[in-house]
Length: 384
Image (tube, rainbow, N blue to C red; front, top):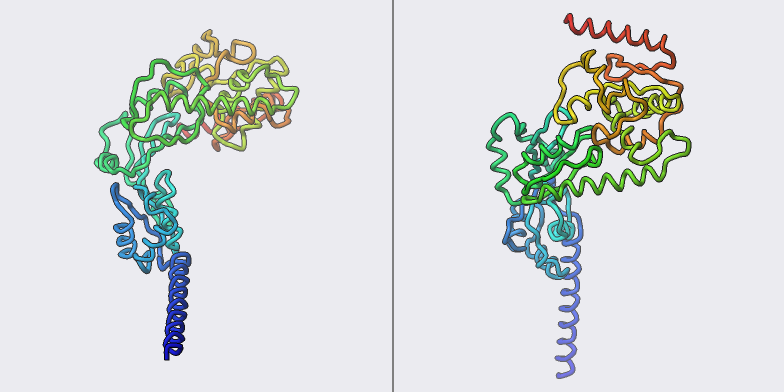
């Protein structure tokens, strides 16, 4: 009898252990396998939230099949205490394991609202946009120019949300004065700027900031990035260039940056200036003359006058030999690379061709024909 009872108990225990193991395997597969979410969502985790609240929200949005398994998995992987506040992209079919990893790894939010402060050559703009989780593309909610009026309500509303991200996007070819003035207008930043950085020493790029970031810290990051870039490109330059230092490369790159907005033309434009330097010709480039007038503190907004072309300044390359003494803007990586890797051409002239690009020439006669065509295009535009 006792043997039979013991045998039955062992059988029941074995079955129980088998069922328990099966349940664990089933729970693990539920946690690691693809989830039921049919379309991507943006999951917002409030400050002070916990896995219980998050799992309930995920159940309501159809992202997980079981909030209990989601919480157990987070506890078992020792991630429940690492929950981060923010807005997180949960993609279609995301597993519970992937969702837990997304909301506990740290770093910036991966969806939600982004405020972008764009520093452009002709104007600055603040853009409020939100990521559409389905298309994973940003949708513009509002935009404004701080210099032209009050901010829209959407700006204040999104500023009040704790998980809004902030980014400064600096375009190629802006001057250091423009950068400082734009930073002063950004109310997300703090602190005064005592001195304007020297021209050319700020890297056009994208910079993540948080409310309260010091303006001087942003400028320091821009300068550090540009210094590293300039040094790396100068170290990798080929032999035979008419440039004696990284500073001269920076000057040439800034002129290239201001002369063309067509990426494919940069090396051709660079070849013209390198050929002129090699032949002892004056550079004769309008952007340097303009810089001599504005010092980078305003937009000229009109064509140059003959009197200005004859005005003596250190930057008037119609009068001086060689390069001007300083850069005339902050060049980007592509223009820096073009300065030391120009195309191999015999071009020494170029003029606008009416398409946004330029017509290049090896001889003055050919150049004069290109100039005549450009003047015809200008005349037609003025008559329309």
